[in-house]
Length: 214
Image (tube, rainbow, N blue to C red):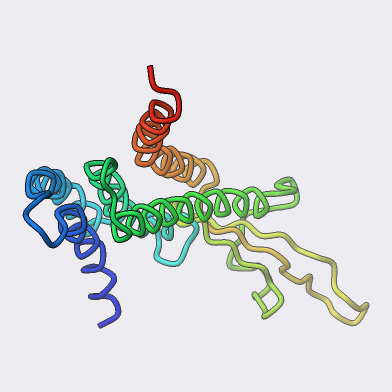
């Protein structure tokens, strides 16, 4: 049930954009119609990223970024179509713009955090070695970083805590390819900026012309 709600949620946000823009009166029917065209144009890419969110493993750093994309596409569409009511915004339109912009900002922040966590996972890479069948077992204190893409596993070992312990302890495990994960996260960070930047620049330009009319 929760999985189905996550899949349907972005489409609900996408459909809400034209409703918010058109309002409850026929006064803004044209704006609502234009917003509907924009929403319909976004259905195909939204379906594509919903059906195939990415090849990264669920719950991994890149996997989380993959699964945020449907929401960001939907909120970016809402932010864009709300510009149609920039000259006559209602509290509902303002609230929709604020929520959409905040959602995109949160998505960007989480993607940047994932990139920082990836860098932290690979810190001191010279101490990492390939994990094999003979490696010590993973325990509750082992820090596990799953970057999401790639099948290799590397580990960092610490000396035994006591003389009577013969085996070293695994303190860190990194699953996947750092290079592939960095490419994916940089791509999604660029995506976050690209979906919001044109709208934010338009808002800034319209605001500037109001403050400093020519």
